[in-house]
Length: 173
Image 1 (cartoon, rainbow, N blue to C red):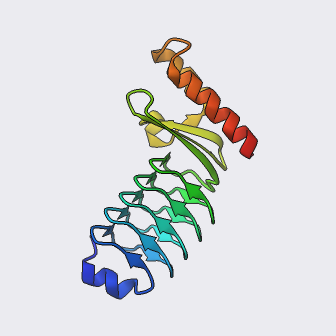
Image 2 (tube, rainbow, N blue to C red):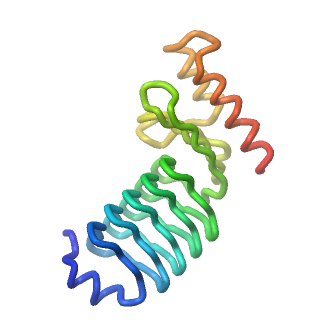
Image 3 (cartoon, rainbow, N blue to C red):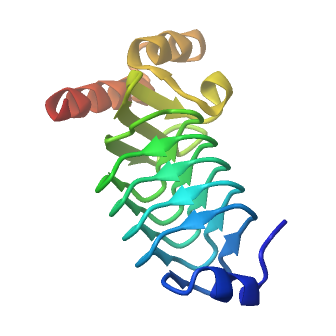
């Protein structure tokens, strides 16, 4: 069930939720949260205090966004994912389903059919999402290289992107 504007105002008086945002049932929203227009917050998600969620971002059912985190415009946080406190998730990022303690990410836009590649560090290590790979969960960098190699020749821009993501995440780890 989607909450009405009145229900949102009554239930979350200490949050700023812009017109057009969709809040589903069972969502917990802490104080001093900002949710941009067109954002969608899935059933049972928990948005801790001080979080900023950009315009058009999607937070999946049961996801947890840690205190002070910033979720960029148009980013998608998968069902059951956990984003750490004070983490900044980039504009247009795609964090896969059920990934825990995401703390670093990089987004590369404009490559391939999906036009979006996201690399991130979490409890599962360095993960890359390109479209719907692995049921929207993403894969390790090495697994993704093998998947890309099945469809594209060596030297395709996906390989360059994966190398860039690996270098970035190795420096952040």
